[in-house]
Length: 250
Image (cartoon, rainbow, N blue to C red; front, side, top):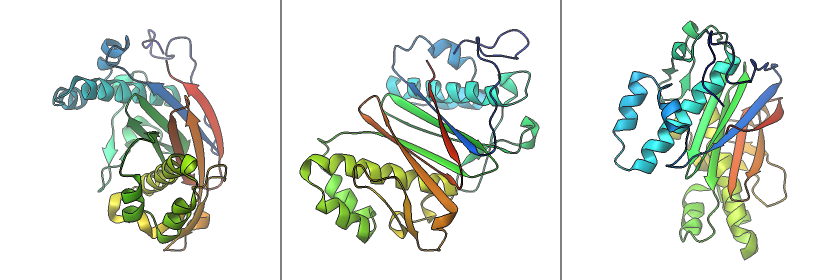
């Protein structure tokens, strides 16, 4: 994406995006310390965000913050009827989940962001809670089994242990991203224990929320995405909805 054009009506050559109420739009962007967008995106951040970026000890973390939050502002601007990206502000709930205040003029627009090494992902929708998560798939990590035993539900852990070794890493990240996206959609942090609900994780099996202790599983639906051959992403939102994969923000 390019900087805001004079008058603030488009970003580069991209017009304002429509977002029908039944859709969830998914975007992703790659992040590096040498990203040519760093200066441009840094200029889009609020004073608070600039201060937060400056606190990072490692350059890679500072760059990731600038890129992920700058692109979020670009994306939100595409869906909002505002004259300037600088008009975008956030408010957060008790657990820190951000949303748009009334001053942004669109109380229906909901969004969520997640980032990991080299990648940020975004989900936007209207009038429904939404959460997104992304992880880089690393089959060499030694603690997959310990994490599964400690945080998966008993049913999920049993399925995970049953997987052939060549499917173990994919199954682990299927489960982890789906669980994280569900918690982020609910917006209540770890007050929702990871073992209090069950998702599918077997490779090739559709992403679904199978069970929730409070009996609300039917309220939600999930989607899972593979990105660039080495990332897993998952989206959870209040059902029903249609996923629109909008692609890469470059």
